[in-house]
Each structure stands twice: as C-alpha cells, then as structure tokens.
Length: 446
Image (tube, rainbow, N blue to C red; front, side, top):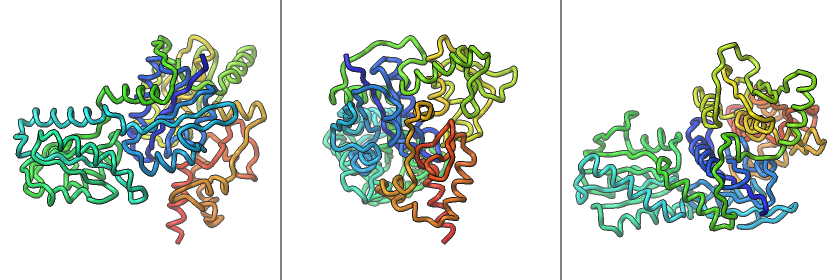
C-alpha cells in the first residue's frame, strides 16, 4: 500500500491558543485512530506554515483537509497559493497532493448546528415560536462565496420550521451582526457563531458586535434575551467529518489504532535525527535543539531542575508549552522549563521534537544533507495574495528592526536573508509572525 499523509490546514492565531489548538486536538484523535501513516496540521499564522508543511512528510499520497467553515478566501486563494496547489489534485516531484472540500461543507455540520440550538432551547426552556436563531459567519468582502455555507446552514434550519425566525449575519461582511436586532422580532435570540474554534473572533469580536459584556451568560440586549452558544468545535462528529472528507477524496481506508502515544507523526528528518542521536550516545553527550536536549531515552528542557514533570502525550506537552502563556511562535526562545519526556526508542524523539518545534526537524535534516534551500524575502513577499504582498519593499530600517525583534528572540536563524550565515537550526522563509510584525512596524513608521 502507498504511504499516505493527512494534513489539516487551519488559520491559527497570534492572540489565542484555541484557534490552532482545536485543530491539533483533531490531529491527536486521528493519530490515535491510525487514519494515515503521517498526520499533522499547518496554519496561516502559526508553524508549521502552509507553504512549508509538505516538506515535513515523506508520503507520496498527501491529503489536505481545510478546517474552515466555508469555501472562501483562505480555501480558494491562500491555501492553494501557499502550498503551490493547482486545483483539487496536484502532482509534483513524485507526490500527489489532494485538496479536499472544506470542513464546513460536510453534511454533518447541519446536525452540529441543530444540536447546539436544541441544547440551548432545552436548557433555557425557551418557547421555540418566540425564539430567533442567528447563524453568525465570518464572511469576507474579498470573496462572496465565503457566505454560502453560513447561508446554507441558516436555510436548512429555517426550512425545518422549528423556531420562529432564522437569519444569517457576518463579522466581516453584510448583513452585519448588529442587524440581528432589526431583522428579528422574537423575544429570545440564540446567537450561534459558525466558527470551528473558540479563538479571538468567538471570544472577543463577535460578542462585542452583539453588544454582549465580557460575561457570556444569557443577557438582555436591546430589549431581547440573547443566548450566546460558543463555536462548533466541541462536537464529536467533527472529527468524523474530517475523516470522511479525506476518504471521499481518495485517502486509502486505514484504521489501525495507534498504541504508541508518539505514533503517526510526520517522518521527514527522522532518520537523520536517529543517526545523530546514536552518534551522540557513543560520545555520552545529548543532542541540543534550541532549548531542548535529547538522548535516546529522554527529551527535556535545557534549564530543567530536578523536579521536572513527566509528559506522556503530545496533547499534554503542547498544553504545557503553548497555552499559559500563549506562544504564537513555538520557536521563540522563551520555552517553558520543568518538563521531560521519557521515550522507548530514538524514533520517538522526533515526534516529541515535532510537538515542541513544529516543522523544525525537516529543515534541520535538509541542512544536514546539504540540500536546504532558503526562500528570500522578496520571493515570500511576491507569493502573498493579501496584505503582506510587497512587504519586501518596506524601508530597510523597518526590516532590520523586525529581524532584531522577532528573529533575535527565536532559536532559528533567519537563513532566508541572503547575507545571513548558515545555521544548524535554519529558517526557510519569513514566517507569518515576522510578516505581521514587519507590517505593524511599517505602519507605525509612517
């Protein structure tokens, strides 16, 4: 059977750990099920980046599932451009990459919406005839198709004649969220954000547009009773929907429950790491990656004291390192200490390192093989389809300040700068965090 890889493509965030965190939770479940030989995630705003994730897997059959609610700007423009995809199926360098439909188009999402509404009606004993449901999508004026899925969910619920009124509104499009209060008459409003993660949009932007306070319990707004549901992410059927989208696109059926907590990870760089570890063992010296130390038996923080806590899974380790405080750049040199992972065999070290520093091991291994190719800032800039296009034209002072601020606090070295010397931990291209920081510095310099 041909090896297969499953990649979940999400948005990520520089503000909240939950946006990418939900996607990683699906990855953890799918790895446990043994859905594919290699399973990982990639993001627009967090590592591993959309344009680099394909380098982290060795499989020849790769399936990318967009974890987005609609076929909009990101699924139609950003993901294909960043991943160099030329339609639903792209073949290059002996690999076949298949881009599936976005998660929001799976029929199961309608059931998820109905279940959330039903729970709130029952919990608060609402009169359905005097209840309006507002399905709140993100939307974007850059792509009118981004409203289609939210509008469809509203239509499905409306056609059921189950509640008094149903409307669809949008955070970044029309009709806007505050129009709920003009377009409905019911005493009760169930406001359901059609988002897949409890990130900053769900916890800050949408409630603010609804006129809700920081307390998200039922509230009176504009003379109405408003019940805010939270996003779709908690429903168990979502992981099944991801699996079905991949199978529909041709992922070979495979269900091999993974007894190894560190199984199902990307494999690129694993052989190089194992070889390097064996060489270090002979010298009785650990191998160091940034702030992480590795031997054939253990992975730990370089500044650990005697009381470090054992980590037994990727989910546990990820929560320890990225949630409190949130670190949108996993390779920033402020990694929390006080943890260790005991491993049974050297290959597991690669999975642990991939959890700590997503995407790093593949670039390190390429550097070891002397086939690492960095991408100059001009190329990264010209590849952009949105606000970062042309960012290489910023003043040299702004670029230098951003390099000092972001790259100076990162364990990787910016080898994408043509005048930058080589490094054992190279950085292939300016990351989204760097681009965002440069854009903000550029604006403040005007």
